[in-house]
Image (cartoon, rainbow, N blue to C red; front, top):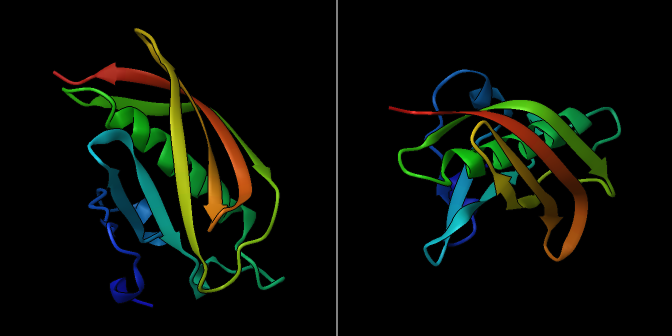
Length: 140
């Protein structure tokens, strides 16, 4: 599957190379200039487990990517988040070819930490909920 199957408004995220290259590709969609952006993921063959569904680790990584990106993008200059705690609650499977969207809410940003929550949806169906706590550094 390629970027031609990406829903309108989403464009490939330009995350730094490394681990995220293996878990994605991930896509970002601005929401009328409101932060945080939506994060998208198409389930591909390298995401699938022995039950022909996305591995739980894929969904947990997707949750971490979406939550941490929201913190990173929340202020200017950008914040530099490190995951301290991540909770992912699995409510349903994601199958090969399905498009998932992570919606994130920043609950609080303090001096040294940020608190977030959100959901991963397949269409209108919530297949996972998530929350995270991030240590933040402020870039110079």
